[in-house]
Image 1 (cartoon, rainbow, N blue to C red):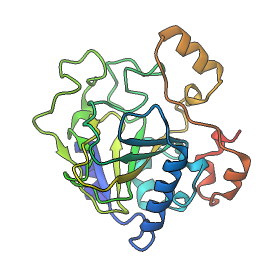
Image 2 (cartoon, helix red, strand yellow):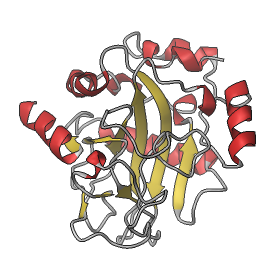
Image 3 (cartoon, one colour):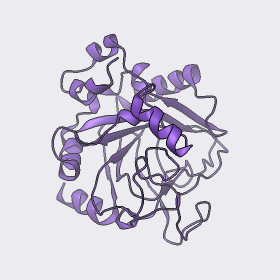
Image 4 (cartoon, rainbow, N blue to C red):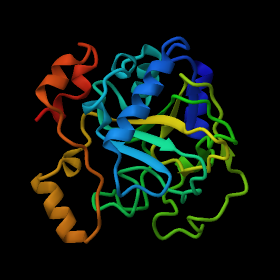
Length: 262
């Protein structure tokens, strides 16, 4: 854990292995494939399966969200009482295009609710990518630029590096199915092309500290309406959680979602 924490702090990312046991990850993989086929976002990029608020449709991965190793690392960066801001199914299908360099919300300057650059050097949001398929250069393991989380800007805004240009030190994250990529949401990362004939299946779960205002992500909220009108930009959204879904979650996981219950 000490080595992973150093990796996270210096490079902006690390990989936790076997968060979902090898004999259980296959079920989650198949359920996310089926859920994406049924609830796929029609506005997602070509050959990208995308389902916002996937926890509302499938909860097979919920018991793993409070993994002690994962929470231990998250709390070193965000403090206690973390909350979940996004749950998203993300499938890179064979032949998908490479994506642009970006940092995640609230550091993506294309979002209405972004934190304006230059950023303070403080961890404010953490992204986890749950590998339900093996990640490597062939399958489309996420592209990252190690250390870029310490920059005070990123290519989504007024930055000198073109968002669509390869970076000299970029690497594909590698990991076995069941592993979790944990990255500082400021880190420059990009969708990698899947060069195989099988889908690369993942879930993206983002964690926030208790003090970060998530209301801009809530459909119909006054904060969201005001920022959309003021900026003319788009914004991500997290669908509200039905009461019955919340009640079905493991007790240790419920505090991560109570703010999303409709």
